Image (cartoon, rainbow, N blue to C red; front, top):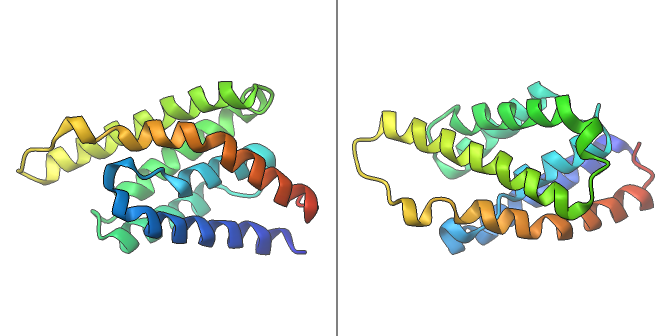
Length: 156
């Protein structure tokens, strides 16, 4: 199958999974970030910064957040992964989960900072970072599932 079709399908499924697990609130993993990170690590030329920006805009529109906030964080996370993929891809899956935890913690902090500038209401910190932990815990599942798909359909 076409590489573009497989990657696009996995991104659409990740968006659907994000919408489905939206009912869990702040405990829902960041499925789109995990899928984007996987494809950048597995096939470095598959998703660039422009594609990440577009995915971030789609995320902003899908969830009604401040337009451009997720686009900015997608670009930042993608840029860091693109620059360090040669190092990160040779770590174990559990070490990668720690890196992903740190990256998504940075992402959540940037989103918190943007929300703090735009909104005047107070944000509860106790529930804000749970998605970072659940994303890091779900990383092995996402990694092994997408690796199976990549090998089955010979995505290179």
